[in-house]
Length: 324
Image (cartoon, rainbow, N blue to C red; front, side, top):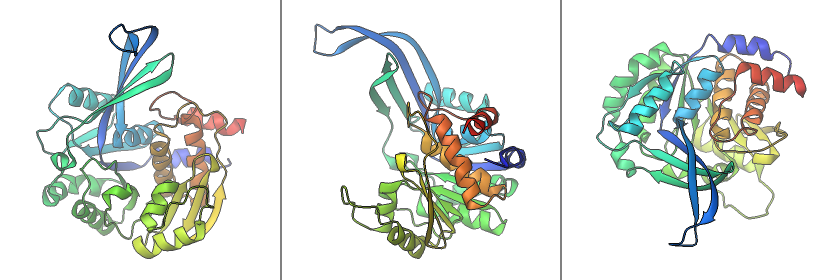
């Protein structure tokens, strides 16, 4: 993709604020050579454990990995998971803003046997435990919004983001002339409006548009794009279609679909975070929508070739683009 080096250079000068549901991703790596005598389940011999930031934290890691400076606001509990989460982010020079609360840190534990995921164990509290009064959030985030070039909301429906919080932070960002993006989760039904970018997947786009999900039916691209613009007045919509690539929309019009760049798909977990990070960075750096989408498509193509929650570096991206 022509111009990738220049785009990465512009991205390196950006400052991004991520606000959303941050969590700790824990991986237990091992092998299974026998069945338990207690129940018909495999016995896992643990070889090692690793930890990284997930959810909104993975968006922040991808932003930092691509060269921009990043600050993330979310819930970090006063527990071992919270301390590991903060450490994982600060090791990548990502600043953290902790929202108040006394609940446990959200953690997803994945058990992998011979590099295949056997199960996932989630530890979290109900969404109301992570809710932040909008006035408190506004006071916490005002300096960071003023200092950044773009605000990225990452919603995993865990409770941090509310209608009022998104509205207040968006108003702060708009008053300061900042770019604003959101990766929405329809079951949260956030009342967002007038953003620069949203990045739902295919199913989420149908739910956001209030259209029925019909198995095996052709995807109604034009109707979805028109309806999303009517409801949310978002400047750009990029709908990730999995193996079918990305659908680009501006002003309510379906513009084109970009085929997926991935050649080998090993693990899709976190690919949406990478796409959101890359799209927001490219657009905030002044790229056209199609250029930004190709950039994000390539970044996601690198990540799905890795196992587990992963990021992409400028060198990996340039190597990937040159091979294509």
